[in-house]
Every structure is written in C-alpha cells, then in structure tokens.
Length: 98
Image (cartoon, helix red, strand yellow):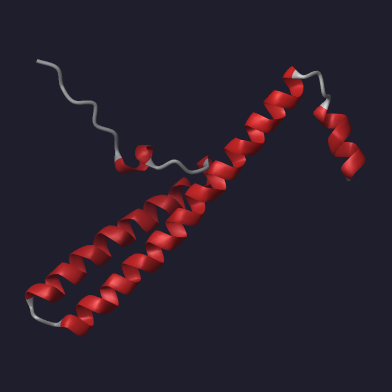
C-alpha cells in the first residue's frame, strides 16, 4: 500500500529560504491563534475569541507578504532567464541602470 506523501508544514511554505524561519513562526502563530479563538468560543467569551481572530489575521497577513515576496522574486528570475535566452546580457543592463 502506498503511503501518502506528507510534507512538513515548513516545506509546504513557498517563501524565500531566508524567510523560512519567520514564516514557520508566523504559521505557528496562526495555529495558536485559531486554537485560542476556538477555546474562547467554547467558553462563550466572544470578545476574547474576536481578539484571537484578529491576531490570526495579523499573522496571516504577514505570512502572505512573505509568500508575495517569493512570488515577485520568482517573476524576476523568470524575466532574467527569458532575457538571457534572447541574448541580452543582464549584467550590462544592471550596470547601465546603476
């Protein structure tokens, strides 16, 4: 029987290598905030649940920024590869802009 191919949560994050530690912390923050929000809901403390929902959204927004930064990086890499395929020396372009 084939085993499912599970990735660790950090491996599933599409962020730059230098952002991986922060992304993992933000993912843990999201996890914890949703746990605390559910716990508050079970205790009928709606104000506390709302506070934790806001914390989840803050962590998620910061995580989304890291993912977006990786997507922008990947776009630039693809652009450079396309320029090189078309015979454009990107080092000359970079020097002329600097």
